[in-house]
Image (cartoon, rainbow, N blue to C red; front, side):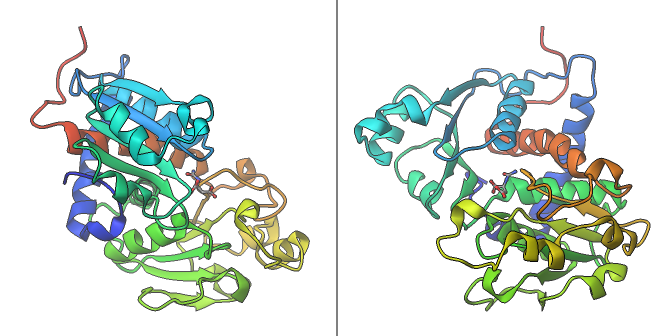
Length: 313
Ligand code: NCD
């Protein structure tokens, strides 16, 4: 594996391998000094052309726990504002010696383009509506550990609810969950579904209430108000009344069911109840697992035989 651009590039066995590697990274993260020298001397550069809180800091923490050097490229104060092209930006930074780029960009396919302009590994941290592979991996890891499904998701019933149309998380999660064997239902009003669902291995529902009692995982998406160019929803209140997670809806879930959300949450829209009051909420586990999963990805791409034992001295 040279780059991580899309879940579609991975087989179920590849995903499984990365989740196994994540177990080691969790163990490292729980040590008193959660740091190993595995990627010492490697240079990881984050290029975020879109806002982010958790993904950016999570990659940064992951690289540091593996002792890589990190550079954060602040797009808002860079020559991009003077009209420098993406290609020139990448070639310029590459010339300083980069081993991996972690990139988020509003255009689908930007990470793929970048692979042509650098010899560094490229990790997609979210491109437009297209893909967000490390989010899908951390979601798989969270389900795997919380529902004790080490080997397969066969028989698990997962619903992904909300703004599927604009969601790179939904696209990546559908591919990853089904590659591991889960049965996925996507739940949304017709206006928030992609124009074509050809090739999506999912069931579709426009209604949430009746499927709640059968679920193992309820995955809520953020309503992406910044990506909606036209009125796709009559009102947020109406969306919330049909699809928002209220205490009454949560009570209809089986006791073991997990509630997940990639963040950031629109409280009062897709999630009406306080997640802290939900027994099944694993939303903060997702954030914690995000660091370990990204350590696994960076190690897989850059490790080249570096070992995970030993402390930093
Ligand atoms: C997601 C993203 O940016 O794709 N957030 C994240 O990475 N945790 C989902 C979202 O913005 O709704």
